[in-house]
Image 1 (cartoon, rainbow, N blue to C red):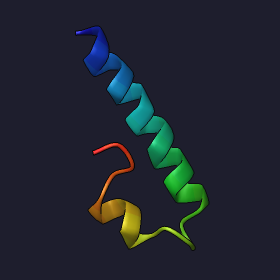
Image 2: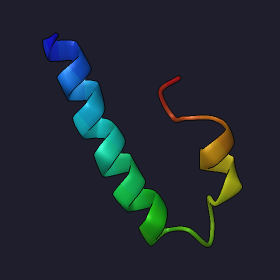
Image 3: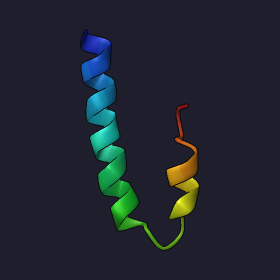
Length: 36
C-alpha cells in the first residue's frame, strides 16, 4: 500500500527528529505519536 509506505517514511523522519530534539520531547513522543 502506498499509504503504508508514506507512513513508514514519516515514521523514519519522526524518529530522526526525535533523536535530534531528544532533550525536549523525550518520553512524550514515545508515548503518543503526533499523528495518532
